[in-house]
Length: 607
Image 1: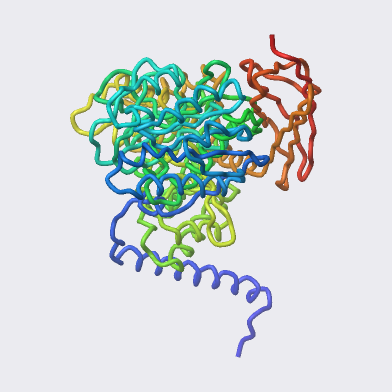
Image 2: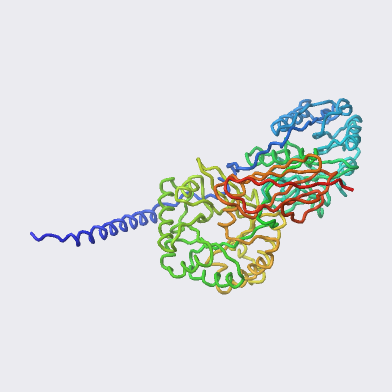
């Protein structure tokens, strides 16, 4: 018998292995193509149930807080225990935040001299003693938190109107909201009551007698599900749900809703805990340090991202337009299709970030965890062979994903997912998935499929106007705008001019907005969550300590601190950025992994 040469064996075994692997992959894909698709659902329904990893809602130091149980208010409610339930909710929440809490009657609260903050929860019928406590608060240096229909009736529950609320907040008008199936409150970034709350966070309230204000200081506003303002009775600007004000030298925080209105979801409770912490800190003139949402003091962030699937070759037109505008973008490749466009795929990798849109655009969410892992690992392997690097980002086909998708993507060495987030925030979130964390980059603006729906003009100028209107809305919230589009729609030659118009607008706005790939935004959000900042004022010095808890150097962080009313900023041993007279903004130099940086800000007495 003829012997087989060793060289032949050396060559033949790998070749056979390749053939076998290819056959197995082909067989699996053939099976997958004939297997029924999972039931359809939106990833939003999964996100609704997931808590987000947010900052601690603890006060930096204990604050003495008195919660007023106004005896007159008890008669307003149908049940004798209703007011006690509201007061108890406040007491427990304040204690959880680290405050020293006492519940006092109206007369006892009026005579108290030890509290730094007075909380008067939902007291429509208000006793004279409570009003006297309010009037005396500024002179005593006591901050006040008012909620709901405070003082719209006298002690005998006879109507007085909104005079107390308007006087305490400086509002031009107050009005009870019209009937709604669900009440939403959207919280923009940048105010002292929004510290550590994700930009554009949406709070869900059970319908009730919530109050809207027309006021120039608008820390949060009543909105619809999609974060659009929804004023009371459609009256212009009558939509403020939360505000803070200086009245006769005293600090007042007003909530147009009540703690007991907050809907029973983990996200809502987490947001309202931060809101309560911030309200107490501001009312008590306690400095709260926070890392601003975006690097180098930018107001908002923006990205452009394409799902490269059907009409794959159109990606070239979009990429050319984006390069001409100077905007790097993200391309989520369907990896099976990408192999037929190898040269274009490699050019896209040079022009921006490459993510995956799955290997064949079949649905992921709803399949078993094992099958999702196999499919995402396949897509990663194909992208690595094609463009020389693995993807960090996943754009699930049709935005259908579940926790198994997230776990599978982490197992495939991904670290962020771009998809529907229930419109609960206009910014990324960190989600705990098993023992790991995943960045969810939420889409809160319309994609090109929605914008080009039947009945809308397909003229590039009209499309661009819609996209730019949504960009301005997210920008105003201080959030992250993503123009999400498809190779078979906006990347087509006849529609790509609208994409170019948006790209040029973003490029012209880089003084205020950080324009980056989706992956860069996700990476920043993860790193920012590892930066801790705290501040303490002693005499004419404020000490600000910043620590980087991550394993990489972080650049561009800006720390913001609200200072006491009696002080103004003199100088600092770090770079100060422009700010109002009650705020310090420090640009932190590149901070190495696990490093700590301390700044000293010299304060002087305000004139």
